[in-house]
Picture (spheres, rainbow, N blue to C red):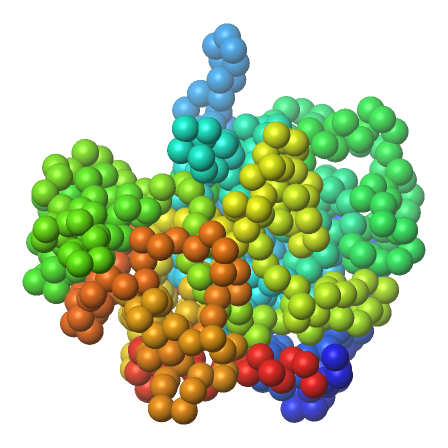
Length: 585
């Protein structure tokens, strides 16, 4: 494959090729040599990296720091808990302490190899704790990591309500997997029994995300943090007392994947006792972030829909029509469970339901709008995904994706095989289910799918709107497109790749390119017989699931970017489609 090089960003890249990292922020408590910068990695063709990538990275960093400083104030305002009882309990303020600690960890950009992005860089509150850069959502899909511009292959899933996903389990009666975290469910929770806490352990050492070469590096940075006393208050005095080798800072400033590590996941040479202590602290890192994500500050149950269930909100006519469609003709709540029964769809002659009307009584006042399962929706391959172009070594010798555009994202199936691009499978009895799981991705909660910054009140063109991306590969750019895909996938199928729809058709409107993974497709969608108005009404209902109605959503006001305007939701983002054929030249 011929390698492309961007030229439009040459001046910008040159300006930021040498990056300095500020060590004297109040979160980090050391003063050591500034690590050497890593040259920009840019193997991408025009249209993948957005032109504003450098300035938008800096914007999000400023927003992260603002929230982190607020978390420092919240910590300083806490009354220390009284440890009492048997087993010992941190009475009165223990919950607030661990949740505040999790917030500090989540927004601390020093927990990345170049100390320039936090976990929150891909998960900001005003986007429902998903991707905060509209131009990235419109183009490269995955977010640039600490080593610019390495990037992964999938969208940033929302944090909200993720802690409620159970430990991954195969249900032999249903013949399906339920639980886990990540699109491919690779954070199983097998060891610490929290899928969400285990999820938090992956990005810091992912070469294409925060890029640390060793989990001990995160613990090392925690031991230097100003909020170390809070960590030890929550998890015990001495929990970060580790004898660090003299070269730890040098190692922890070198990106994961560097050839000098020879593939080792533990280049920080610790004694067995200190490695055990470091591993324990890393588990506590994950559990702390899980506590924050479970808190009312993130998983708030404060939407219009929650108020409706309480009898404190009257839906508009379109919202109620959308809800009736969601739990009826649209068949949405067969996977995005709303605490009611589900009307079988579609109606005759394609199904058995006489009128596609759900008459079930609400059985839950806190529905999570997910079945915790996985499904292959038959999405087309998205040639804009940055990962497909990362076929050459970067400055430290890492080649992120030797397979190029030939790489196929089999999701859960890849994980069950312990395959490239996923993680080791800790349960050999699951491996035999890999082939029937190919293409399946986690059914995310529908809650907060429409959450946007307050000044950009919608995800939909003409706006003013905040550009999001939907599904695991970001192919869908509006909720209108999302519902239309569910509705018409099998009405307008064409055996073409994205960017090559036949003349007279419009991609995402009257043409759906062939699925990336055609086997194991979910056939309960694809031909729902919804009208255009009914699609729009379902979008209106989805907007009632955004938190922040009954009480303000915390930290949702930090967005300092611009809103987008113009166009139409049905074709939103089509101008950024990269024809798949270009990846082969």
